[in-house]
Image (cartoon, rainbow, N blue to C red; front, top):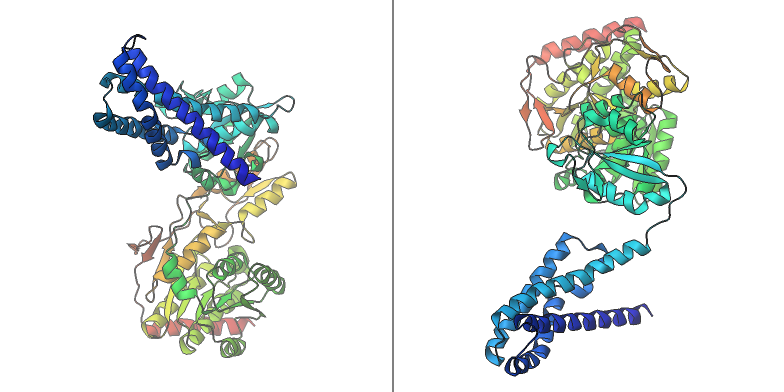
Length: 593
């Protein structure tokens, strides 16, 4: 039945186009002679009508007129109509040179008429569809303002006009800093001002909802918008997966409240998929710390690269259980081995390497909480340093091809036990890389990740939910932030770049003030900082710095072929000195046991 209906529809469109061609060509001649056509030219016209119809329909078929969905017609389709009509009129004129010429001016008139008639017929399809599919308003509608009148904002506006009434949303206008757009009308609604005018526009127009559609805006710009709305009775929303807006994948039914992760997002990581697949596909991959935030995301992303076997190792029983269940459910064809093991035990690790023969190791297991490790330095050394040393030594002697160590920005000019242990591992790994030709060792440094266990974002959410206060150690404290998927994507990519001993440093963007982060989270919760929720400054904790660094003063970074991954220069240390320092730390630890 659908096939029959399709043929009937095609036949109807062909007949209509044929009538429009006949009309345009005939009117062209009649207008040329002011409706008083001599008999000679009337005979010429009658002889040209059928060939003209055939030529134009052929042009329309060539340009795919009858395979297009015209209710979604845009400027591209208008350009296509102009080209097809021009080809049809031009071909008709060339044919007429042999079969009987009409006045040349009549072809020009016919071109304009046919462009109007064909274009109008297609536009009417879109207008009719828009009228028939227009949703009915659901009671009183909330007035909305779109911040950002670029391509993303226009797409959101188009969707709001189409689906807004059924969702109870009425688009009032745009806000955009581009001066050329001020007082202009886009998608039928005006640009009402710049970001500085936002509070005034909200009050004048009675705006109840602000939709941020600025996928490439930096954190500072989004932070400014949130601060401007702090005392306004408005909801702030964004579209989930805001980077997908550019691809046209907008669904207003999925509008959600802005979360802090949305504001700190950056453009997606560009993968060198060939290089990544080359070193992971078909391999036995061991991930330590697999139950943690970084480790579990490593497992998810590595599983997509079709390794031969994925070994999940962690001391946390619950963490291993959860990620094991998730990976097995999502990738049923993949062999997954969950192991509850402690990297501090060299004998246990030797058995793991003997039983499963890993060829790629991602080492993410570590104690990470700075103040806690200041109170438990022996455990920091045993786990972060000795455990890592066990893994590095065993990887060098058991056929591992590539070893990626997940380090931290706290390893740069370390002021804490945790940072110092991570820096020692970086140094030890570089020394091992110089003396081992069978395995490529590399480290990857980055800062804080949003949503990780113990993350300040999770702490702030809990404190806001309890009614405050939100505790910040110092008003000037700054930190680098990334989302967990973004950080892990770059870690895996860095693993493909390693040649031996590199310390890769990830592009973390601009550092963020922790107090600004706290204020933004309070505002996004619909509350007012220092009124509804108090912010308290508690002072720096042991081992903390006001700001973190990605490179030390002695390091001049080098670029890689990936624009968001850099290399800290190789620092040479005497192997004997390194071993002496390690032995000293191990003796100190044993005295405290």
